[in-house]
Length: 216
Ligand code: E4P
Image (cartoon, rainbow, N blue to C red; front, top):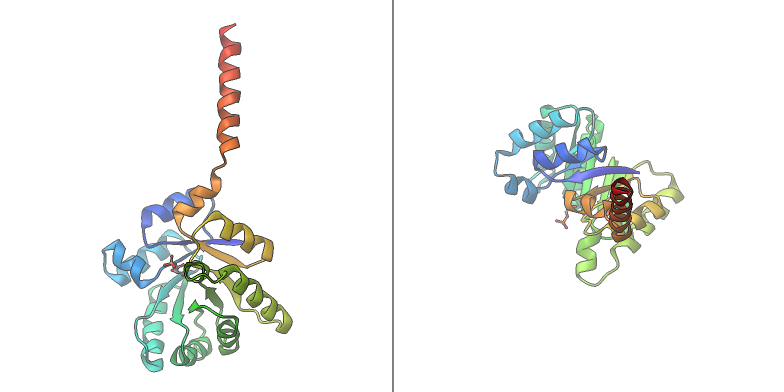
């Protein structure tokens, strides 16, 4: 299972990379705005930090032709840019054209299995089901992930399932059990995944016993 980090903060990418947790990066306009630097500069800096690993950069336009041109510009920034396109009819036109131009895409803001099916048919390299935002409105987000995986297996699509809008370690555990290709994870959730109270208790107990033995 591949782990992407969902951030536009270089320091978080560096820290997660040091721990071997970064197979790619996803950004979105909200994350870029938080980083407080010009869009293209942020994407170039991230791409340099993780050479050869996919970095999703999202288009802002909503018309097919504009999304396509924006995608071409983003892809020029670095060979590891994956153009992120929102799920909509124009977006699917842009995905098909970008694929024909040899550019990888990640279809984002996917909230239903049939949207994921359409994205795969358009030729998306990755599709991002947003689980946390579905959970927020009382719909089990992980059910959609399992349905998308099933549909892609039924028809042998090679579009990768990239679980997005991750809020907790449990989203990652269930994604892994279901066999999702990728999860994009905020650094905070990666850190939460390392923790277990029995691990902390065990470390403390071992150290206490060790120190007691040294004093004897
Ligand atoms: C994915 O690529 C998105 O950037 C992200 O997962 C959105 O998550 P949110 O619902 O926490 O904003």
